[in-house]
Length: 201
Ligand SMILES: C[S@@+](CC[C@H](N)C(=O)[O-])C[C@H]1O[C@@H](n2cnc3c(N)ncnc32)[C@H](O)[C@@H]1O
Image (cartoon, rainbow, N blue to C red):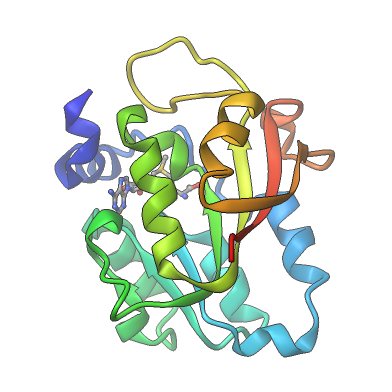
């Protein structure tokens, strides 16, 4: 269980192509969310943590979002992303531990969550909520998907319930939306919640 906190655990999975979580495309609910954003959102500072192969980051970049930061502590997917997107600013490709990001150096308008929360050790969930709130600007948004499912395993993905998430996130966030996603990828239909929440005042 401790090993999921280490970059090596994930790097090895990329090296062995043992990446069952990878959909090979942007998650459909996140594409829909991005597609309805106004033109003015294109300059906002966006973070995609635990981005892996980062289809969401690629899509945002293709759509003209100019201030997107990718964070992952495994170097392999970042290297691959940089090879696929030669014009993506390299200073926005951060190979580091999400929990070590400095809020003095990094402040975001919104964060996109996609199978990162379920990848961390569940014992760190409150730490995730606190760090997320620190990295967001006042009233900044956390948007994305969380599994509403118990996988019953001692390895990622670690699932959870709406009740658990409501309890954890309301310590630092006002929840606007936490509802079963209606347009998930077929493999995840009925098992993920679309979330949109804002850091409390
Ligand atoms: C299950 S994968 C999901 C990748 C991507 N979001 C996707 O949906 O395909 C989890 C990712 O989070 C990264 N990760 C896990 N813990 C991390 C941490 N503490 N800091 C930065 N990245 C982390 C892993 O390296 C891995 O790429």
